[in-house]
Amino acid sequence: MSIRKKLQIGFTLILAFVLIQATVTFLSIAQSERLVRQAINNDYNASVEISRIGIEAQKLRRYEKELLIYVGSPSARDKYFADWKSAHAQIKTMVDRIVDNRDGKWSPEDSAKAREWRTSLDAYGDGFVRVVQAAGSGQITST
Image (cartoon, rainbow, N blue to C red):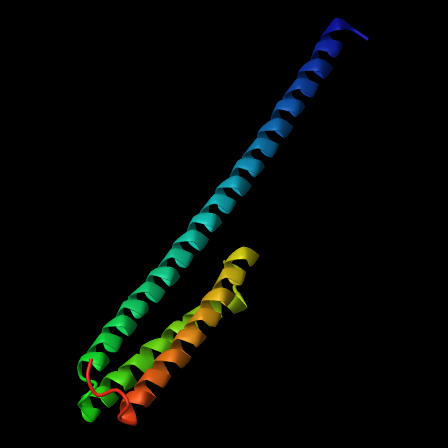
Protein backbone atom coordinates (compact mmCIF):
# COMPACT_ATOMS: atom_id res chain seq x y z
CA MET A 1 0.00 0.00 0.00
CA SER A 2 1.38 3.34 -1.01
CA ILE A 3 1.80 6.36 1.23
CA ARG A 4 -0.76 8.23 -0.83
CA LYS A 5 -3.36 5.48 -0.29
CA LYS A 6 -2.61 5.43 3.45
CA LEU A 7 -3.02 9.23 3.60
CA GLN A 8 -6.33 9.03 1.73
CA ILE A 9 -7.65 6.34 4.12
CA GLY A 10 -6.44 8.32 7.13
CA PHE A 11 -8.01 11.54 5.85
CA THR A 12 -11.28 9.71 5.09
CA LEU A 13 -11.36 8.26 8.62
CA ILE A 14 -10.65 11.67 10.17
CA LEU A 15 -13.35 13.26 7.99
CA ALA A 16 -15.85 10.53 8.92
CA PHE A 17 -15.02 10.99 12.61
CA VAL A 18 -15.50 14.78 12.36
CA LEU A 19 -18.83 14.35 10.52
CA ILE A 20 -20.08 11.80 13.08
CA GLN A 21 -18.98 14.05 15.94
CA ALA A 22 -20.68 17.07 14.33
CA THR A 23 -23.89 15.09 13.81
CA VAL A 24 -23.94 13.81 17.40
CA THR A 25 -23.20 17.32 18.71
CA PHE A 26 -25.94 18.86 16.56
CA LEU A 27 -28.50 16.25 17.65
CA SER A 28 -27.62 16.57 21.34
CA ILE A 29 -27.79 20.39 21.17
CA ALA A 30 -31.17 20.17 19.39
CA GLN A 31 -32.48 17.77 22.03
CA SER A 32 -31.16 19.94 24.86
CA GLU A 33 -32.75 23.02 23.30
CA ARG A 34 -36.07 21.18 22.95
CA LEU A 35 -35.93 20.03 26.57
CA VAL A 36 -35.10 23.54 27.78
CA ARG A 37 -38.00 25.01 25.80
CA GLN A 38 -40.31 22.33 27.16
CA ALA A 39 -39.17 23.06 30.73
CA ILE A 40 -39.64 26.81 30.22
CA ASN A 41 -43.14 26.25 28.80
CA ASN A 42 -44.08 23.92 31.66
CA ASP A 43 -42.71 26.40 34.20
CA TYR A 44 -44.59 29.26 32.56
CA ASN A 45 -47.84 27.28 32.42
CA ALA A 46 -47.45 26.24 36.06
CA SER A 47 -46.72 29.83 37.05
CA VAL A 48 -49.83 31.04 35.24
CA GLU A 49 -51.95 28.37 36.94
CA ILE A 50 -50.63 29.27 40.38
CA SER A 51 -51.17 32.98 39.66
CA ARG A 52 -54.77 32.26 38.66
CA ILE A 53 -55.26 30.36 41.91
CA GLY A 54 -53.86 33.37 43.78
CA ILE A 55 -56.23 35.73 41.99
CA GLU A 56 -59.22 33.54 42.82
CA ALA A 57 -58.02 33.30 46.43
CA GLN A 58 -57.98 37.10 46.65
CA LYS A 59 -61.54 37.16 45.29
CA LEU A 60 -62.49 34.56 47.89
CA ARG A 61 -61.07 36.72 50.67
CA ARG A 62 -62.86 39.80 49.35
CA TYR A 63 -66.22 38.01 49.18
CA GLU A 64 -65.64 36.65 52.67
CA LYS A 65 -64.95 40.13 54.04
CA GLU A 66 -67.95 41.60 52.24
CA LEU A 67 -70.18 38.83 53.55
CA LEU A 68 -68.99 39.44 57.08
CA ILE A 69 -69.51 43.20 56.69
CA TYR A 70 -73.08 42.64 55.52
CA VAL A 71 -73.81 39.69 57.82
CA GLY A 72 -76.95 41.42 59.10
CA SER A 73 -78.41 41.91 55.61
CA PRO A 74 -79.71 38.58 54.25
CA SER A 75 -79.88 39.73 50.62
CA ALA A 76 -76.32 41.10 50.58
CA ARG A 77 -75.08 38.11 52.57
CA ASP A 78 -76.67 35.70 50.07
CA LYS A 79 -75.18 37.60 47.12
CA TYR A 80 -71.66 37.52 48.54
CA PHE A 81 -72.04 33.90 49.60
CA ALA A 82 -72.99 32.96 46.02
CA ASP A 83 -69.92 34.83 44.75
CA TRP A 84 -67.80 33.13 47.42
CA LYS A 85 -69.09 29.67 46.41
CA SER A 86 -68.27 30.42 42.78
CA ALA A 87 -64.70 31.49 43.59
CA HIS A 88 -64.27 28.50 45.92
CA ALA A 89 -65.45 26.11 43.18
CA GLN A 90 -63.08 27.75 40.68
CA ILE A 91 -60.10 27.28 43.01
CA LYS A 92 -61.12 23.69 43.66
CA THR A 93 -61.29 23.02 39.91
CA MET A 94 -57.82 24.48 39.37
CA VAL A 95 -56.32 22.54 42.28
CA ASP A 96 -58.00 19.35 41.05
CA ARG A 97 -56.32 19.85 37.65
CA ILE A 98 -52.96 19.99 39.39
CA VAL A 99 -53.74 16.87 41.42
CA ASP A 100 -54.98 14.96 38.34
CA ASN A 101 -51.91 16.10 36.34
CA ARG A 102 -53.29 14.79 33.04
CA ASP A 103 -50.90 16.86 30.93
CA GLY A 104 -47.84 15.89 32.98
CA LYS A 105 -46.59 19.40 33.72
CA TRP A 106 -46.55 18.86 37.49
CA SER A 107 -44.07 16.74 39.40
CA PRO A 108 -45.32 14.09 41.84
CA GLU A 109 -44.21 16.39 44.67
CA ASP A 110 -46.29 19.23 43.22
CA SER A 111 -49.32 16.96 42.94
CA ALA A 112 -48.84 15.80 46.54
CA LYS A 113 -48.68 19.42 47.70
CA ALA A 114 -51.81 20.19 45.68
CA ARG A 115 -53.60 17.32 47.46
CA GLU A 116 -52.74 19.05 50.74
CA TRP A 117 -54.07 22.33 49.29
CA ARG A 118 -57.29 20.57 48.30
CA THR A 119 -57.70 19.12 51.80
CA SER A 120 -57.13 22.56 53.33
CA LEU A 121 -59.48 24.18 50.83
CA ASP A 122 -62.21 21.67 51.65
CA ALA A 123 -61.77 22.18 55.40
CA TYR A 124 -61.77 25.97 54.93
CA GLY A 125 -64.89 25.79 52.78
CA ASP A 126 -66.72 23.59 55.28
CA GLY A 127 -65.82 25.97 58.11
CA PHE A 128 -66.93 29.05 56.21
CA VAL A 129 -70.22 27.41 55.21
CA ARG A 130 -70.86 26.77 58.92
CA VAL A 131 -70.23 30.46 59.63
CA VAL A 132 -72.72 31.45 56.92
CA GLN A 133 -75.25 28.96 58.28
CA ALA A 134 -74.78 30.44 61.75
CA ALA A 135 -75.40 33.89 60.29
CA GLY A 136 -78.48 32.62 58.47
CA SER A 137 -79.90 31.08 61.66
CA GLY A 138 -79.39 34.31 63.61
CA GLN A 139 -76.51 33.10 65.78
CA ILE A 140 -74.24 35.72 64.19
CA THR A 141 -75.87 39.10 63.69
CA SER A 142 -72.97 41.50 63.41
CA THR A 143 -69.29 41.51 62.62
